[in-house]
Structure formats: C-alpha cells, structure tokens
Image (cartoon, rainbow, N blue to C red):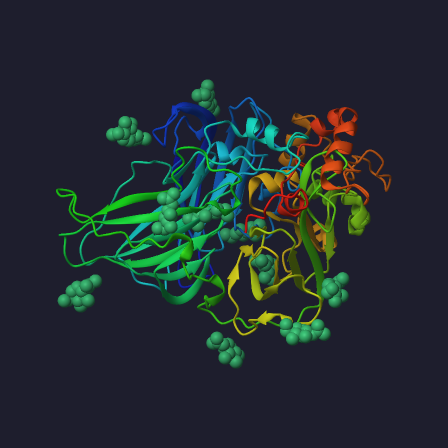
Length: 584
Ligand SMILES: *[C@@H]1O[C@H](CO)[C@@H](O)[C@H](O)[C@H]1NC(C)=O
Ligand SMILES: *[C@@H]1O[C@H](CO)[C@@H](O)[C@H](O)[C@H]1NC(C)=O
Ligand SMILES: *[C@@H]1O[C@H](CO)[C@@H](O)[C@H](O)[C@H]1NC(C)=O
Ligand SMILES: *[C@@H]1O[C@H](CO)[C@@H](O)[C@H](O)[C@H]1NC(C)=O
Ligand SMILES: *[C@@H]1O[C@H](CO)[C@@H](O)[C@H](O)[C@H]1NC(C)=O
Ligand SMILES: *[C@@H]1O[C@H](CO)[C@@H](O)[C@H](O)[C@H]1NC(C)=O
Ligand SMILES: *[C@@H]1O[C@H](CO)[C@@H](O)[C@H](O)[C@H]1NC(C)=O
Ligand SMILES: *[C@@H]1O[C@H](CO)[C@@H](O)[C@H](O)[C@H]1NC(C)=O
Ligand SMILES: *[C@@H]1O[C@H](CO)[C@@H](O)[C@H](O)[C@H]1NC(C)=O
Ligand SMILES: *[C@@H]1O[C@H](CO)[C@@H](O)[C@H](O)[C@H]1NC(C)=O
C-alpha cells in the first residue's frame, strides 16, 4: 500500500533533507462484520479491505500521494485535516467546495507537499461518511525535531455508531426532528478497538499523538498516575506544559510527552471520557468512560486506583503558549459570525451562521473561482447561500464567533491555523473591556472550541489564495448548514495556479458541471442556484414554526433531496422556547 521513492535534492527547509515521494494506493472499500465495541457487528468503510485504517506517516518536505479508487456504491472524497494546501487548494477535499465527489468506480489522485509537522488526520469530507469509519491518523515527522523522546504512540479517541451514517442523517435531517436532536453514539473507542492495550517500558519517554476523530463527542483524556507534558497542538509546537488531563473537541489534536515510571509493579489506565452534555439522551448501556490499560508488566493485573476527573478537568487550551513566539497584530478586516440553530422554511432544524444556513452550490466553489475569470472576484457568483466572504490577499482577518447556542461547538478553518486572541461571555458588542484578550503570543490552532452562550475572537493572515471552508466539526451540524467559505484573492489564485484537468473530469464523471457560477452558468445569472432555505418569519412559536414548516414540506422534499449539504440541526434555543430545559 505504501511506496516510497527518494527524491534527491536539497530543500531549503533545514540542513539537508532527503525529500521522498510517498505513495499510498487506497482502494476505498466496505468491510463487513466489524465489531470494535464488542456489541454489534456492522459494515464500515475501510481502505484496501482493512479497518481500522492504518496511519499515514510522512516527513516534512515529502510529497504525499494518495491514489484513491472508490469501490463504494456512494461517492467519497478525502480531506487531510489541518494541511495548508498552499498552492493546491483543490487537494483539500470538501465536496462541492474544492472538488466534486469521486463517484463510485472512479479514481482521483491527491498529491500535495508536506510543509507542516505534528499530528493530523485524514477523513472523508462527503456527508456523514467519516463516521462510518473512513478516518485515520496522519503523522508528520520533523527531521529537526525540537523535543526529545524515545518512542512514539498514536492514540485516537472516537465515538461509534451502530447504524450507518446515511440512516442517522436521514433521521436527523427530518421535519420530524424539529429540535434537531443529534444521533447519540452507542460507544466510545480508543484506537478503534475496545480491547486495545499499550505497553510502557520503564524509564522511557513517550510522545503520544492524541487525536479526536469523533463525529460528535468531546473527550476528556488522562492517564492515571502520569502527568502529561503538552508539546504540540493541531500541528503547532507549544512550550511544554504539564497537565493532569486535557479535553479535545472533534478534530482537535495534541502531542504529549509522558515519562514512564521506573518500576513495573503497577499498571495504569488511560481514560477517555465522552462529554455527554450535548447528548439528548443516554442510550441504555452506553459507557461514556472508555479506558485502555497501559501495562508495565502484563503478567499481573495490579492497577493503580483511578484518578479520572472527567468533566471536572481544569484544562484550558487558552493557556497554551506557542514555542515560536508570534505576537498578534491588529486586524485589517473583521467578519462577525453568529452561531445559531433554528427551524427553517424547509421544516428542519438547521445550524447556521448569521441566520442563513450554508447550501452547497451546483458547481464546486473552487471550479467557480478558476472558471469565472474576473467575475470570480464578485462574491455573488459563489451562490446566495454559500455564506461566502471575500478576503483581500495578505489582510489580517479577525473573525468574531458569537455562539447563541447553550452548548460549546468546535469550529475548524481549512488551509490555516489561527490565533485565539480573545473570548468572553454572551455576545460581543464591540465593548473591548468585555473580552479576555490574549494578544502576546496567543495560542494557535486549526480547530477552536467556542463556549456555549459565549464568544471567541480569532485572527489569521489571508496568505493562502483559494477557497477555505470554515465549519462546525460536529458532522451533524456541518451537514445541516453551520458552514461558511472564506474566499481569498481569486485574482492571485488564478495568476499562480490552474485547476488540474482531473478535477474537471471528476465532476463530469458524476454529472456535475465543472465550470460556471453556483448555478452552473458562465454569467452573473444565478437563477437555479440553491437558495431559499431561510428563517421562518417572526410571529410563530417554535412549535408553530415546526407545524407550519411541516405543511410546506411535501413541496420541498424533492429539493431537500437534491440539496445534500443543507441538513437540519438541533438546538437549545429552540428547546428552551419549547419549554425543555437547556442542557447546560
Ligand atoms: C478494490 O476493492 C474491490 C473490493 O474488494 C475489488 O473488487 C477491486 O478489484 C479493488 N480494486 C483495486 C483497484 O484494487
Ligand atoms: C475483544 O475481546 C473480546 C473478549 O475477549 C473478544 O470477544 C472480541 O473479539 C475482541 N474484540 C476485538 C475487536 O478484538
Ligand atoms: C512542492 O515542492 C516542490 C519542491 O519539492 C516544488 O517544486 C513545488 O512547486 C511545490 N508545489 C507546490 C504546489 O507548492
Ligand atoms: C472529541 O470531540 C467531541 C466533539 O467535540 C467531544 O464530545 C469529545 O469529548 C472529544 N473527545 C476527547 C477525548 O476530547
Ligand atoms: C527514575 O529514576 C531516575 C533515577 O533514579 C530518577 O531520576 C527519575 O526521576 C525516576 N523517574 C520517575 C518517573 O520516577
Ligand atoms: C465517568 O467518569 C467521571 C469521572 O470519573 C464520573 O464523574 C462519571 O460519573 C462517570 N460516568 C459514568 C457513566 O460512569
Ligand atoms: C514575544 O515577542 C515579543 C516581541 O519580541 C515580546 O514583547 C514578548 O514578550 C514575547 N512574548 C512571549 C510570550 O514570549
Ligand atoms: C462586528 O460586531 C461588532 C459588535 O457588534 C461591531 O462593532 C462591528 O462593527 C461588527 N463588524 C462588522 C465588520 O460588521
Ligand atoms: C464593557 O464591559 C465591561 C466589562 O464586562 C463592563 O464593566 C462595562 O460596563 C461595559 N461597558 C458598556 C458600555 O457596556
Ligand atoms: C503560502 O505560501 C506563501 C508563499 O508562496 C507564503 O507567503 C504564505 O505564508 C503561505 N501560507 C500558508 C498558510 O502556508
């Protein structure tokens, strides 16, 4: 599956690095009778007939090639989460943003330069497919690694559903689910296996890559009897920080150094506790607290007592300090995004920014950008509900995220890391004294947790021409519309790059236009572009809105089936209005 060819030559990176072209042939296949939680066998989506899918490992300076063949009876697409894709925007993965989905029985080659190091992952960016198993670690080694350790381990934590995502999505995106209750996972898994065990050798220092590959659940992570020293978060080195536990929302990653004990008389448990706050119900038998033994000596079963504190963890990622100092600078351009969940005119409860759910256009936005010439600078061509924001090349962008929902949500920016410069309670009104600022070398990540009924302020440099999705990484909410597009300098993108022919062919193969605006037209005429899924006018109660919407449904069902992405979403505001207690 993995073929490495050495490319001789000098890279300007550090001293002399031998760059390699690392090729993975990936046949995306169904794998039957997989039973990772020992509760219920099911069909999953794997690679080359295998599941769990082994990690992809490369080194800074390599070129990663993934030759994907789709053997499923549904489309697919892969996203290398956290990779900047600087100069290769179309390799980013999200369907109808940077590419058309790969139809069944078709091939697509992903190829991009590895310019970052640390802990990443690769997952399907087609509907809820990654929750069916198409997700795996991407570990990038640094030939000039600043930290010293003896061994490396990768630990993934994830939620697990017994039903196929397409079924769960259908129930979730339904007029019969006006509160938008998300499907609740049946299990939590460490390394995709309820039986996983680890072995520590006394005295050794381990670097553990911890990755939250959840679709929904947030986890608290700890190891009894051992402190963890955080050295990397989302691919950014940090000054070492000792913690007893940490939390990870979906898609967040950490590297921690753990020093093994000197003795073998006791073994210890690793803990990953799902935060069940957002679960609408707890399925019978769900154990949200998953453990995996770390054996110093597997000949005995003497374990240290649990020190697991779960949700009482005092960890706060705003305290992490990047190893390489980068103080923030003032912004050139500000974008306000207000996060909310409401029942919309199609009768579904959807997530949305600024009162408008994201709806996928009829042409991938990257294809629009490369085919519309000067009109690509006109934000309208990306579609009336693409939630597109046009950014000027090299501007410092500030995004204010106001979360009206009672629960915390993880937001991921493609193509960049951002600085987390401030946060506060309630809605940001422009009163700078209401913000807890962190302007001197603030933490940097690609996925941020925005607290319920709170706001966070992030900044990034628009130095990567192309189209970058910004979305909630709770997959259910992404599907229902909690997404936006940052469109950076289409003129510079057109000047520097050209869309490879394969990314037009893959559209044609699936019957999707490969050029034109969001309506598939080579003009400013946007009639026919997905549109009109909006808030229900005031004057209806939430219950009334649900009922009214239900009446409109039959008319809209055909349309809803076409508009994949714009699924429904749940939330507390609605629940509160419906008289149900807020969950937090
Ligand atoms: C991919 O896997 C399918 C199902 O196992 C198999 O039929 C097919 O021959 C494989 N294709 C390639 C290109 O390996
Ligand atoms: C885990 O262990 C149980 C009990 O020994 C066994 O039945 C099951 O097959 C194992 N599951 C996996 C995924 O290895
Ligand atoms: C990838 O790196 C190679 C050098 O190894 C360079 O020639 C090429 O332009 C890079 N590609 C992109 C898209 O940056
Ligand atoms: C993974 O992310 C999900 C969703 O944000 C969260 O509920 C879960 O607790 C996270 N898991 C860990 C171990 O942090
Ligand atoms: C292991 O023993 C060495 C040498 O006695 C000591 O310096 C070190 O702190 C010990 N490590 C732990 C984790 O106890
Ligand atoms: C999970 O662990 C936490 C922390 O120890 C504890 O508070 C909670 O009650 C546990 N939950 C269950 C269902 O055992
Ligand atoms: C980062 O660098 C700036 C400018 O050199 C300096 O003022 C600041 O104290 C440094 N911050 C940290 C956290 O090291
Ligand atoms: C963002 O919201 C703040 C607070 O309401 C406001 O002061 C500011 O003008 C808004 N920015 C933009 C670009 O609309
Ligand atoms: C601004 O916020 C501060 C801190 O929360 C508060 O004390 C002050 O009253 C606010 N000012 C206005 C004008 O609302
Ligand atoms: C992208 O590459 C340009 C140089 O071509 C560089 O200035 C910029 O910082 C890079 N941005 C990212 C996010 O890698």
